[in-house]
Length: 232
Picture 1: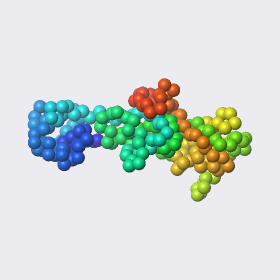
Picture 2: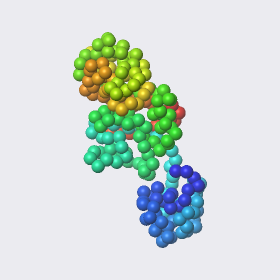
Picture 3: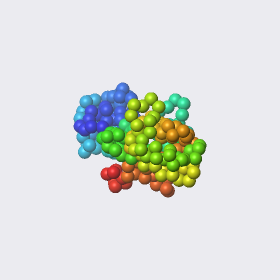
Picture 4: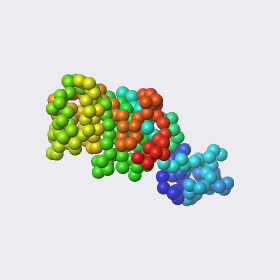
């Protein structure tokens, strides 16, 4: 939300009301700014103003950043008619402007970043920023030395013109792999393993850039990012 901001937009956003209902409430003298009742929809509100709505304060909380440990069965979307979404796991006010910085498939678990800061999420998700995302992969077939080297060098994905960027690949036992990639192509990790004649059985994201999923964060839990994590 940018300031100064129209009063009807401010109330609609923070009270999570349709703009029409916010205007009806303003017209009925339900809103005051700095102690003065305001009935003009286009009254300009600043971040320093004290706004009351039905005698309750409305406070814009600014830019916020969260990490979530996504469980299986939740989709990375603001809403979905068929499935539960990661936003169903958050108990926070004023989530209408929030979005996911780096989505995961419904059957993939692990680190999801949620914010209302578009510039920050662009730094996280844009391939041009070269931010690595790290996954723990369990495969159907043993991981061969040749497959490991192909992943490190770059592989040819189906229906893609260019090879993937070189990845950081570390074998963890015969069927385990820690894989770090700096791109975000559709189903990329699954397609990379398919390109080396293997299949992903389980997939878990443990890190994005310098932000690592905390070991104390159980599946379905979330917490705000620290100042150091936000700085990347």
